[in-house]
Length: 200
Image (tube, rainbow, N blue to C red; front, side):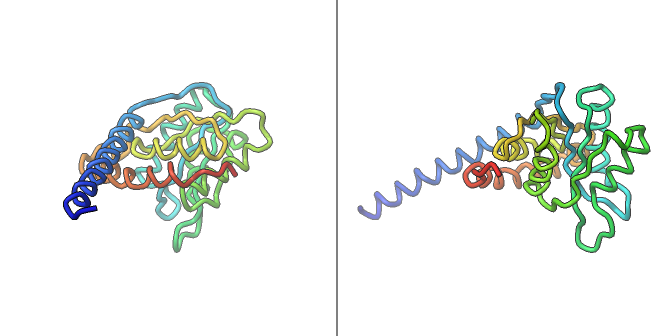
């Protein structure tokens, strides 16, 4: 193969990769705008930062949305996720539980997954929690940018996911932050799609 042919081939490959990256960005945005909330076995809230026992604005927005779905009677269980960050004395899930209790969700309706430090670990914990149930359908609550990767992972782990993004997160309200997270996700989604194949 001549140098000119190699250059042309590399150019074509580069254009294809750029096109796939652009399509991924578009799919992240489209999925983040779609609300699939419907009756399910559980509502799953993906964790976010907590500050000395109080939910961060991002986590609070997710919880408010999930509690509204629970009040609407879409699921009997509210599964709150998230372990302890570096230096934390409590988990994101424990903080979420207290927040939900204060807003009228009974303790009997709240289930904690308080070990996960990543999206995959949290969803694996959710799978373990639901292992004794007949139904595997869940409403996933997080920020819009997170929805595509979440749904791919949930399916790979054996759940039947319906996405319901919060609309009040500070990330969504800031254009710069929103696009920064979308770009970041556009690099993570292909990795999840290509390599997260097991259903364990």
